[in-house]
Length: 193
Length: 218
Image 1: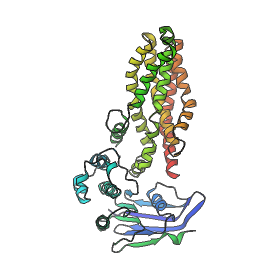
Image 2: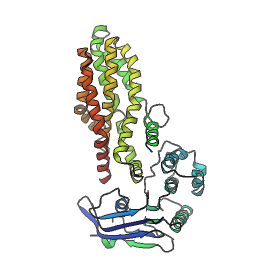
Image 3: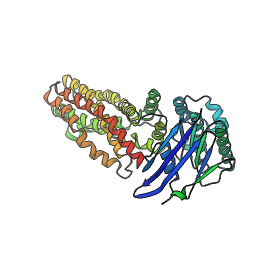
Image 4: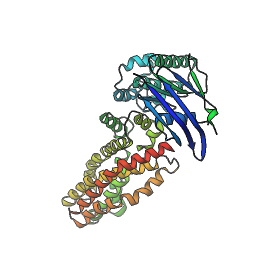
């Protein structure tokens, strides 16, 4: 399936400050876009606008294909064991084998541990498991590398590559550099006011 | 989809479900009924005359105890955002939550009314009116509770105090007609309780949905 995400002359306002203006963006299947910019330049807001969770101050967004969002909130019930917390989303998404996904993300030993006992990095990997299970062609990743150790960072890059190679598209807001071939870059500061 | 949501919500809010839902509102309800005779004295006539009103107030307060975690928690966890991305409307989320909220305290409250009524010397026809009134009124209390919880969810500092304040005007009609039926001994008054309850149940998913949408933009 061809996935596509595009935005025309986007502007974003938070409070009485316009963060960016006149931003055009077009991403299609098989591409990954890295959004860079210092803290507070509006990376998270841009991703939320692209996801349709935030109304842009101006401009419009359109997309073909489902959207999966990974941000700093894992959306997993803290008191449930990881397997059960993931199972809730798997049931909604009709995901296939949770075990396989957990294996892939090195979560298999943690599957019976309540989510609130997981460390920051483990929680991030758990959120990635949720994202993988969703099987959405459009990935919006907000700081996917923060809080992760070196091995896990490599895993995120690997998963992103595979997702893009499999016909998906990916928009990543990250302060850290990403080792992904063919990665396009968008410096949000250029659109700042 | 809706069934999975309801299952999760019930697991979260139903006491004894093991998902963190608290039995506190229920204990609170029985505790009020237990303490009241100690406070006003054991005169059976006096208890029977005023007990119904006390049960109503206890029910009302028990309904707002779980409000703080009813909506704010899932906003913080990002659950509502993730559901939104999967095409679930905010109104549907709130409708499901309203049902789950009522199921988590309504039926148990009705059961707890029996020991409470025994402690307050309410029996026969007044007990029947009290139970029917609670059946008619608790869905409205659940609706009001959810409306308040969603409106105050993004106001971190306000919390419980503001919830209590908002509850007074919103729940007053239910209380007047619900407890009023006991004073008048007239079942027809419960029709008003049910009507107000229904109206609140009907508008709450939209009001609460709009509230969490606004919280998302904030």
